[in-house]
Image (cartoon, rainbow over all chains, first blue to last red):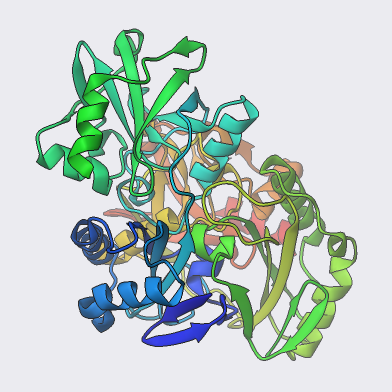
Length: 267
Length: 267
């Protein structure tokens, strides 16, 4: 294993932090999880655009190393023997200066890049369960992909306790918001819809790609519409468009023709 | 500087983590910030009780070292030359095993303890500003003191941008919830009140002490009551009961007799 941190290659997967490192102590920072398809980082520009937008919104200055990060990520994949193999590349942006308390010592940011091998495919269709933990549509932790993920961890844990693979989270108003790790696409009345960012959805990269191609539409999906959901899929960088076979007690159509179209558009 | 991790004393304030350490990558874990008064850890049992309760709620097993943590913390203060001086001791509980993705590899937890010197007193009264970031009363991140603090970091940053020292956060229903770093006590109609945990308040240790002594009462504090607020204080382990002199444009009574009573009860 080789990792990369602020311009340095580190052999092994361990590195040193300060005891007041704010990623470790406060979940202060942002991350991107990217799919390596064996040759290239899939939708890298969408990941970097989101990271830059969120970094600015949360008050970070952009590290200089970001301009050359495509090369770093390709080298990282090569150094971790991911040539020809599926992998997950992770990029973490967090405060460079340690600081106790809520306020940062400076807006300077560090970058960490790591790689992991993935199974050849994302596996069988998911089962989904609704959980208690709502997504807070007013919060930075919902709109940005931050290092503060405890609510999603707990959402997933609740889903697993209910016997499901993944969580369905509502927002504080009871509308559909997202999955524990990813966006939701639902088929209602023959249309592929996805919750709006203002309803608590993370602006995901696969979601953005499908929206840009006009294959899905943003919509507030309130509780009244839940009974009309015919099919559901979780989307994220690693699984692409992954269908669900059940949401709680309800069986869903796995091989919906719309999902086949979405998957085809991603390849 | 000396820190302590899982039974080992480490000279300096740096230590090694895995690249998939979940405190660093996901804000997975819990923390306690405790006041060292020069001789002892103030309200240690309340801190440990909260940590244990939250660890169980979030699915962690309790590290064996917790049983002897009082001795560790006293030694930590001594090793960091805090004899006779005010300090902040921090205890972090986080997953022992690294793991990519939302699910933990095991429920085993690591402990980290660090110390920092504090100024002799918490300084002049605060100014407060209401911010956009709501506290999500349904979320683990509101009810437990987790390592996922980005929303509070952003709340404080918004308050600073508004020229204030600290943020006032409402919950998703518009009722008063808490400060960026601490609980709120407000005086309304001559009574000292604090928002309920079910309204998004963190179950703080100073808050718990004042409630146990019958000096403050839990109450839902909705927007209709805001105009009747005469005085406000932020409470947390480090500042105790710290008065505010303004909330937005409104001047508040700093030396409210009720606050003097609360402070006296903490000494």
